[in-house]
Length: 437
Image (spheres, rainbow, N blue to C red):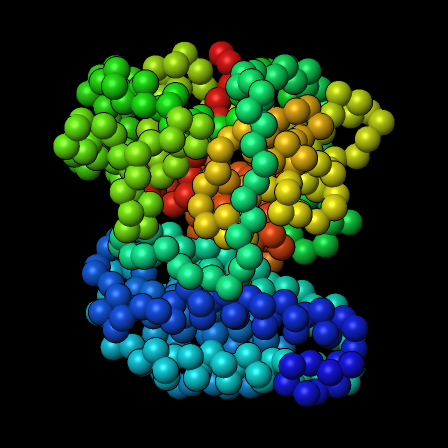
């Protein structure tokens, strides 16, 4: 078999190369239409310059494949001083002198070709497959980051070479709670799942008490009721840290909302202002906002274990293994979940019925990330993976989100995947669902 570059590949090598090329195509499409000024952006503490993002994904491939496996020197002598995410703080990234888009593209393309060429004519080893998959997951996650950078800056929505796939909407689907009986549960990933990150390892027993959880994420209309009931002005709804954030930020409504000249609420989607659509999921809220809403609604956020139990088990859990996805173990299809930017944005919470969990919960994968109650901490027996700055520096400091969003790449997401951000982050594609107290 031959790759697009003409080299002979084994079947496993070809699969890796196809993913590498597809992932890079997406990354370049997300940035190629930006002006030189937009590539640099304006200093912002919660995002990076778009041009930095592009160079960083190539640097990461070089770091973990060519340097780590082959012991080659860095592909570019200046790369570490530009793209080393662990050693270059966000504030410093805005003061760096970056190569042009053309030069950056040439740098990351050269690295890509080198890591493709090294697969010629042989099966990759287990070690190679691990680091190639690590690099792929990393770049796929950064393609989602590029989406929310564009959105944060109010740039136009990206023009991607994907066929838009609008979902079917079940108008008869009723929003409400579903009772989950709970019981003994194995939280985390098992060793049969393939590549997972160290923070997902490994399954361990936990007892989940019975609970009732909403069958969809909170919607615009539900959150609007909180806003219009002075939710952002009522200090009794906010815990101490949330109140500090509220006063520091000066927010009196969600970050990307405003009222038009007729007094109707609008929300900004990339550079467009749109009227609120009642059945879209609430998006771009942080953990503090989700907590305040829950207190107003006399609800609570789900624990991580509750979320994963509801996503991966069924009422006959004693006779079934956990599902990798809410619907089972088959790789996500466009009819099951809003992923991979195939719709261009968030969709009605009543859509994607074929992706329901076995308990009947909708959209536990895709559409919006969902905040959970928990602090991001390691599981029992945690062992660092080689990428030792991915999880460990954030333990004890950030909050866990589950489920992916509309821009998440399908290979990244699964029921056990743990995303994590500081509780003040509201520029990511985050929403939440709630549990009855």
